[in-house]
Image 1: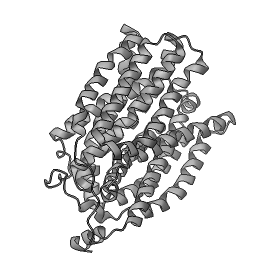
Image 2: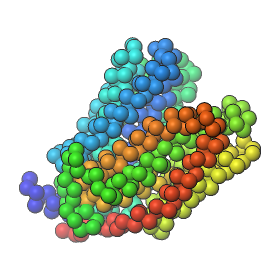
Image 3: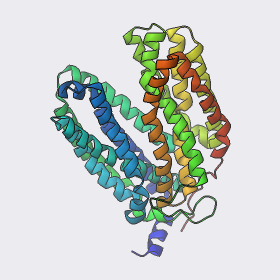
Image 4: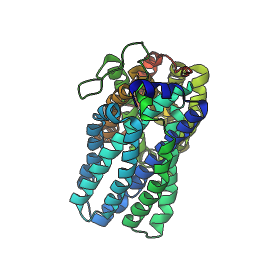
Length: 410
C-alpha cells in the first residue's frame, strides 16, 4: 500500500472505528497495568523465597526502571518503521513471558535478568500505547488520556485484590505469574485487532504546524519536551515519595496502627483513580491548562494537610486529596506533549523523552525522601516537596497547546 493510499484510508476512518480503537487502547493500558502490578504485589514473596537482602532487592528493582528508560529511547524509531500498533502487539506477546520468567527465577541472577527484560518490554509498550492513545485522541477530537490511565490504576487495584487471597492460599509465585500471564496473553492479543492501522501514525502534523519531529536517539530533546519533562520529574518524584512513605509517615509520625497506616497508599490510589475517571470530562469542558492548574493546587493543599494535620485521620484525608489532585497531571502532560510532537513517530519520540524524566523521578523519589528523612524527619521532608508542587501550579500555562480536532472527512 502506498503512503497516499494509507493516508486516505486513515482519513476515511469512521466514528465506529475510532470508538473501537479508543476502547482497544484503553484495554491495552489495563492489561499492561495488570501484568506489571502482579509482579509488584509478589515482590515480598520473591524477596522471602529467594532469600534476598534489602540491598539485593534494591538492585533488582532498579534494573526494571533503568531497562525501561533505555528502551524508551528506541520507541520513536520503532513506531516510525512499524507503526505503534505492531509495537504494541509484539510487546503484549512478550510481556506475559517476562512475568512468567520472574516467577520462575531460582536465584538473584535469574531474577535480575527476568526483571530487566520485563522492564525493557514494559518501557517499550508504555510509550507505544501512550503514543497510540494520542493518535486516537486526535481522530476522536475529544480528551481520553485520563481514561486510559484510569484503566491502569484500576488494574493495579484489581491485582492487589486478587493477589492478597492468592498469597494467603499459599499459591507459589511461579504459578501465579504463569497463569496470570497466560490469561492476559489470550485476552490481550485479540484486543489489539481493534487498534488503528499503522498508517494512522503517519498522517498528523505537529500542532504548531511544523513538520513532525524525526525519530532517533538525538531527536526530540526540544524546549517544550524539557519543560514538560521537568514538570513530570517533579510530579513522579512526589508521587513515588507518597506511595513509598505514606504508610511509614502515618505509623511513625502520626501514631497510626499498621492496619490504618496501610490505608495511606490505598486512599491515595483510590482518589487518584476517581480523578482519572472524571478527568477527561473536566478537560473537555474547561481545557487542559485550567484543569491542570486546579488539580495541582489541590495537590498542594493535600501536602499541607498531611504536614500540618495532627491527627492520623486528617493526614489520611490529606493523602486522599493528594491522590485526587495529582490524578490528572501526568496523563495531561503525556497528552499535551504527544500533540506537540505531531504524528505517531513524533508523538512516540516526545512521549519517550518525557517518560525518561517521569521514570527518573519515580526511581529517585523513594530514595531521596529516605535520605532527607534521615536528616530532617518525614514531616519536614514532605514539607520540602510543597514548593516544588507550587512551581507546578505556576507552570500550568504550558499546557495551553491546541486541543485535538476531529479528523477531516475523506
